[in-house]
Image (cartoon, rainbow, N blue to C red; front, side, top):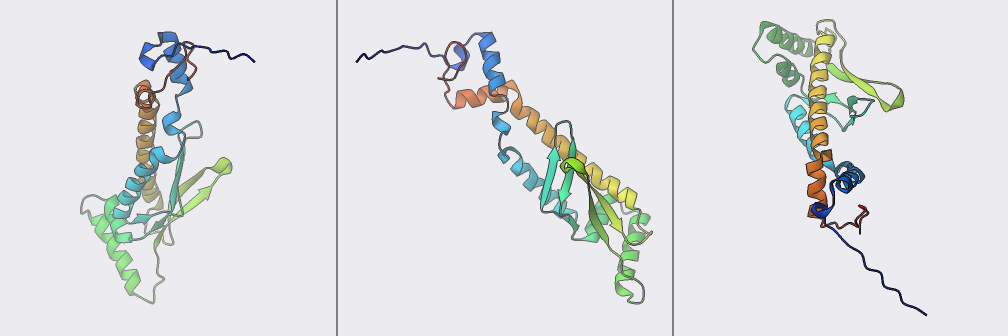
Length: 190
């Protein structure tokens, strides 16, 4: 029986030549976003923000790639007054009129009670859209839906920016160096 020993030249990332560094970076490009952990804290912050304006939800689904969607799963308006006040940042007459109408209809048992809700329209491919619904024409559903769309799209932008940060070269290098990875001359991990 023979025992053959082979020696390898092993390099840290900084010691690799530029062409091999690029190969390694591409191999590890999505390492920071492979699990759902990268955005969980953002969703918790977003949920807290929406709770402050009277909205709750079970989860948020999104895609930052070519599908490019975002919607809330099982959303509900928990506080109509907070929600309406958040739409109109000033103390406008329109705002006050809507709040008075909501309050009047809740107190007046002879009139039909109405309330705001968030509905979800599902489409193919796992996508959907949230919209505001009310069983009266006194509420401008389109205006409220646009407001909700703006909130969701702002959050999707925040997710996209953070995703880009996690997949840029600096973040990948930090990951590689933080884990003390070593490589062969061709860029294969040792």
